[in-house]
Image 1 (spheres, rainbow, N blue to C red):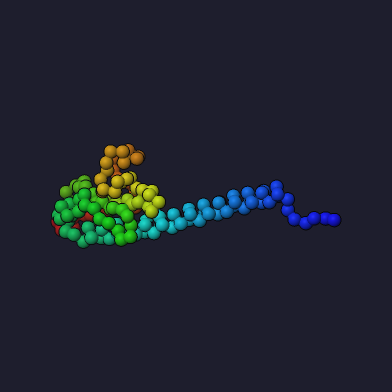
Image 2: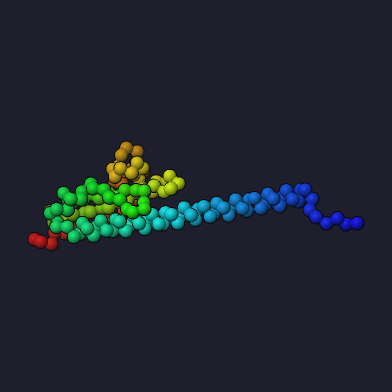
Length: 147
């Protein structure tokens, strides 16, 4: 008489294979969810940064440094902060940099501003270049066209 079915070792091996496969699939889903959130936050931060640059470009040249240098701003639905830096390489040119850093819901900080205060504090400059860096960083030159 032949018996049909699986032995206990076969069941254990099948369960182990299923568990490993399920854990891998779950890890993949969680990674995709985090990437999706990062994309949404990056898009919102980029939109807010572009809007800030548009506002700067529509401001009279002489008022830009006083109104915008070292100012901060936020983006809707993003737990982060953007900061504007204005440098004047010449009398009729302004170098404007807008950087946005944020915290994911997992706690991961995107960008170098780890405490999200809009300033480069001790220990935050990961690449040693002396400025805040982030995946959302825009730079533009503004020229004085009045003179």
